Length: 102
Image 1 (spheres, rainbow, N blue to C red):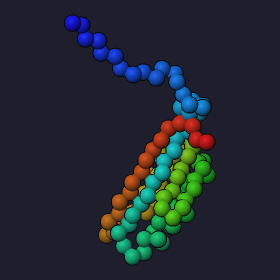
Image 2 (cartoon, one colour):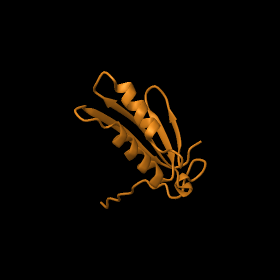
Image 3 (cartoon, one colour):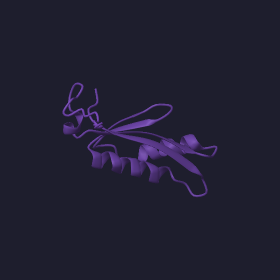
Image 4 (tube, helix red, strand yellow):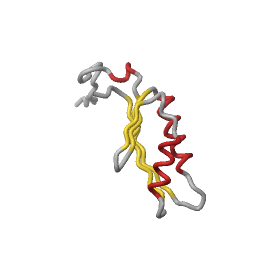
């Protein structure tokens, strides 16, 4: 008995537009400074981050940056650096994506 192992391949199948060719990178992140003035820390970090080369949107739970990968990564790093405070524990959850954005 011969056993054949086949794996699913999707080839060039895409839904809509091939986003990877558009060079769009996204990052949705949430930061949580563990202190009473967490809102001030977060809002100051957002205000200090240069987002002139990316699209950004902030709501009550998270922030989204979209643009070229180098600019998105740079802005996320700048935000984190701006939000970091001495003697304040902070967590940050970030999800990066690559592809087309409707």
